[in-house]
Amino acid sequence: MSKSYHGVKDGQLAECPNSPNCVSTQTEKSDKQMQPLPFTGDLAETRRRLKQILNDMDRTSIEMETDTYIHAIVTTKLLRFKDDIEFYLDEQEGLVHFRSASRVGYSDLGVNRKRMENISELYQRRNEEEKA
Image 1: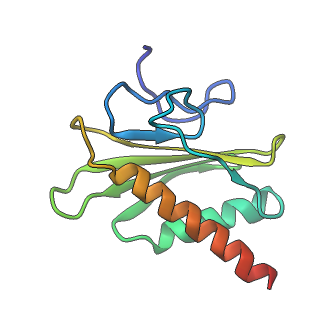
Image 2 (image 1 turned 30 degrees about the vertical axis):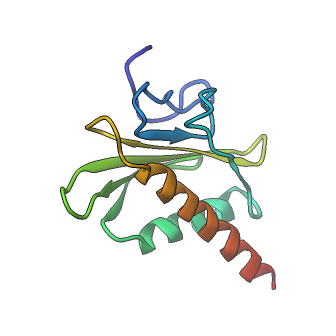
């Protein structure tokens, strides 16, 4: 496996490591795989909604942003570990790919998956509320 990176290379976020502390919409590893999110409107609207959710989250800061990429860091409550969340907004496919991974340790006790399930739920709920 190549060294992990942040960002998008050739339309791909970094692959998850073999440890169980990562989830991604672009991995082939079934135990780490999640479904991408559909765009809600255009690129700018989709990015705005993601940023709004991240800004509302405790102990979360957006570290880097481009038109099609967002990198945020979440600091865990008890032990103050830092986890990375990345979003790749694939305008051609109309999909938001994401990756959430712990920087240290082996197991995360499912924290990254739960976090991304929660973000996905908030994203879909806010889309439905704005449509109503």
